[in-house]
Picture (cartoon, rainbow, N blue to C red):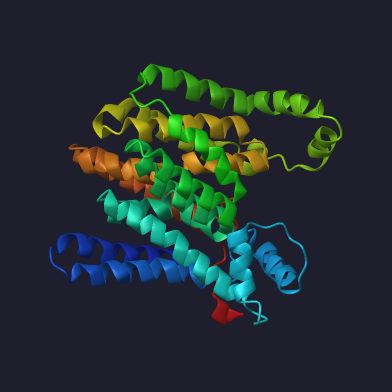
Amino acid sequence: MIFTLFIYNLALVLNLFFAVCSEKIKSSSNHILVVLSFLVVFLFVGLRYNVGNDYEAYVYLYKAIRDGVNTHVEYGYYTLNKVFSYNLDGYKYVMIVSSFITFLFLYITLIRDKILSLGLFFVFTFELLFLINDQVRQGVAISIFLFSIYYIEKRHFYKYLIFIISAAFLFHYSALLLIPAYFIYRKKIASWIWYIGIIVSFIFYLKGFFQKILINLIAYIPYYGERYVKYSKFVTPEELGSGMAVLFWVLLALFIAYNQHKIQRPVLINLYLFGMVFYLIFLDFHLLSRAAAYMFYIKILIFPLYLSVEKNMFFKITILVIALLFFELEVFLDLGKHGGFPYQTIFNK
């Protein structure tokens, strides 16, 4: 575990070093530093081996596609696997390409918002990196969604629709659920409304209120309801560290609700905070919680934007330290739910 802690921190430090330097240098040479930063994180993820809960499932999926088994996987991911099916270990190249696409969209988004270094810091510390290691296809789809929020803010519906539909049919069908996100309320919502929505949702989550209601509703669906309740994976607070990690995300969301006036991006804020409520409602349901993840991970944009305008240095340092401590504890104590530990590469196989 010491090696894993070291390698994650080395990747974080190198990635941030090149990113920060690229922001400080005001010349064409800063592009080289951006590329170096990109290579660090892209290869760190792309060259991993058996890191992430779903890694082995993706290996089996690759072998099934190579052998001509009908998998019903999305067209883009199916084609990507098919391209490398000539090689017994072609799944390694699939992982590398998937990582490249994911971080390409993330880098474009972070650079466009002028938050590259801070954004990358929160990609590491706020768990998105672990999700990308684990849920490969959805990691790509999330990065495309984060990139596409720009088109919601600019009211470019057809461009947004093109990217979301592409993300869905190429990498993860769940992205189709994001089409209504375009119609999110575009003005600031009073902070007290968010306080009530988030706190009540968290209390109900701890009491299992949503799980009971949804199970009862789903059970009424003929045939499929019974099978869903019997075979679906339900996540309990105990599996998530007695709810402490969830409490951490709730407190961060409440903090943003309180400080939303400083960010001046109401669409982004509303999507994130609504996503937090949606996340709490469906957290007990493995499949539905994945759908909530799209908006939940907007936090990797929200916090850099907040820190870029916050003038209180104490608040800035406190948030960065807390985020880093959370990251260190998650890696060292193997607290994450995405199976990112221990870290090893394809060269260790």
